[in-house]
Length: 246
Image (cartoon, rainbow, N blue to C red; front, side, top):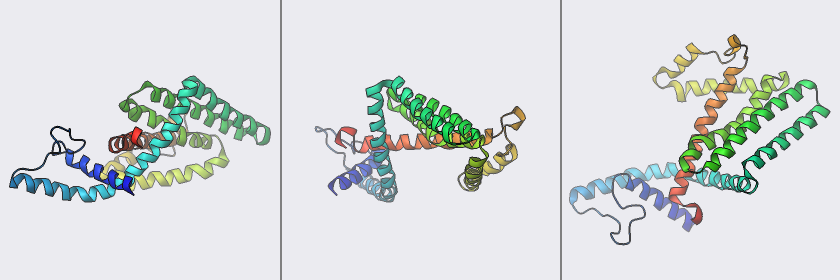
């Protein structure tokens, strides 16, 4: 409970720091800045009140950031122990084993599906591991997290494109998800109508001999912003509760 209270306080202090100096981690010499005039007091406390509902909304997201940071740290620790090449080998062995098992027990089209998914997963995992070890929060947010999300979401879609059985399970829900995103998040400014007029999700790519390319690009388009979002939540978690204090 004490940790929760401290997190909320620091989250609100971060909000205050946007406008007023020395709110988050003030120096021991100068201390926390406080308003000195009536005008400053009105602005200070008004800004504090405006921040309260934002903190209430942001705190659950902060918890997501803590959880993401925890599991990302576990993966990063594993990559540190075995190296990027080792992580790629492990991913290749796991997915390769799954492909072999599929070959022994399921029809050939299932083998093709798992093999295609394996290739996508291994390549995406390699990029995610590589960029995570380059160092720097910016690189991690910009590249490592999006590739990690791609490694998670894209393999099933690739498998569905080459397997009729999986196609029926994955592509129709993907189509419905795309329609929902267009009708909600992308309805601002007529973006949805522009996209609908320019692309057909089900047929895009066929003109280049790449059927299903629309679904692949759709899930990349979901994975990348989601990776950025999670990366920013981790950055917020590091600001509110540095990793060594977690």
